[in-house]
Length: 416
Image (cartoon, rainbow, N blue to C red; front, side, top):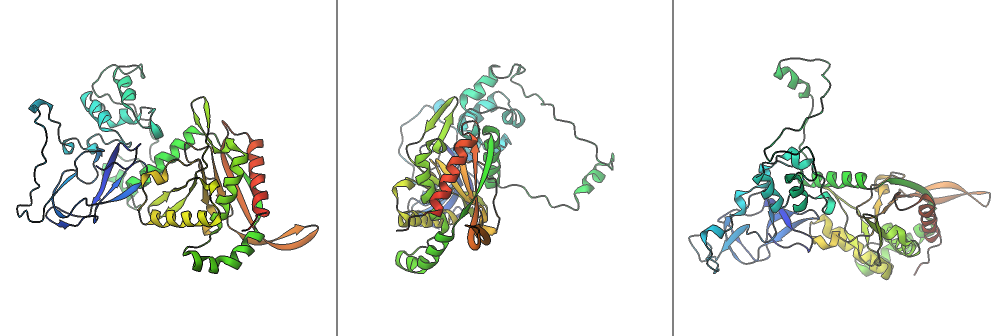
């Protein structure tokens, strides 16, 4: 399993593009893996033949674990050459990762190899693992978390290492109760049941974590984008011909937000228990919609770029996000996020904060509407913007001032 970033400790095999016995070329995509940060396509490290797959699809293994073997093309037996290694006593030889598939525990959460090993040794089932409140990143269960459960420190009612049943909440009886199991299942005949894939599961976990962590409050403001709309319409063709990428409205929002964040540093912060961490860098995440879900690549040091630089970065990140070519580092380290709610004509929305950030900006659809200016009615290009913020740290007054400052910057935008 390749190292995909400093904070990535394990990965899940999504799909093998090649099967044993098939030839592969260096840099040819041979499999897809998923981490808790991003999905990635993995190229072959060398020319040869895929001799053996050691980790099957759906399994999660630690970084550095062998997942396949590639033999030389002239090896007719299809066997890989042994890799020289130090002799080890038989009792210290590590077990292959294939013998401990993650699916055995049937947990809804990602578990590190260490946590899985401890869980199996002490007979912890999926229900017990799902009940543990993890102290790691994104609520992950750490070694200390599971040891505390095993030793009875975190749950007073945990008395035995043997699996115990956790009481399930009673469900109301169906209107047409029946003792016949076939009749009970008949109620599903008119429905289609779709199992969530790993991407949707990750999104669901992240969204629930955010709602459990932050006290979400949303404020909405209206902004007159007529000057920006007129400027973009006048230069967009020439800009794309010259630069090779489009000038989108998102670029203006990022530029204005980056400058406003410098004036309101609390919006650009995070929380660590009882400490507020003000970030020196302004790294703005941009939500990119894909067929399988949503991903948020990060425009780093957005306050240090000009309009063209931001446009270039946004075009590159969005294109590679849709082609699954992003590196894990490119979706990490965001300090503030922007999501375009108006893509499909929606006026505004109340987006969920991207943890561990404290706020997210939602931009609605830009529509021409009659507005009153100096007691006269005029047709202007108007847009609603919403700011969802963590009320634990950010008060409504501070958030409102930030939002109005952003409105001022957009309405009085200084064009290059």
